[in-house]
Image (cartoon, rainbow, N blue to C red; front, side):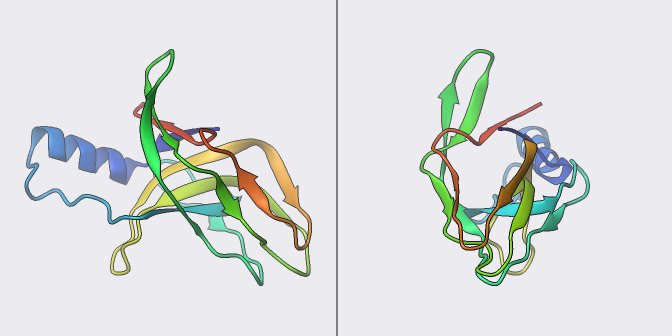
Length: 136
């Protein structure tokens, strides 16, 4: 699944490159992946899924080169052990956030090709290398 940077993240990158690298804060690590029941876009965040056992999951990313271009990909599997023990949940995409408690930064977002229905109690696994983020 290909992801794109949010407008806030693009603005920080451009500010760091061309304006003021010293005062542009980096996102706080670790980054986390959140599941979406309704997708957002480059400007607006989506609606995070709700479930009695759902929690966001930490994710690590590294650079990889493949045609065309250079991407960041998830370095390890991203596994949500369970979203809801009692009801099926429809997941339509993901968002990647930093872990700041005071002012969280939504870094990137991606839409699944089709919604994924997670049955009650089932896990959802995003395999290593399946989340790809690049500058557009």
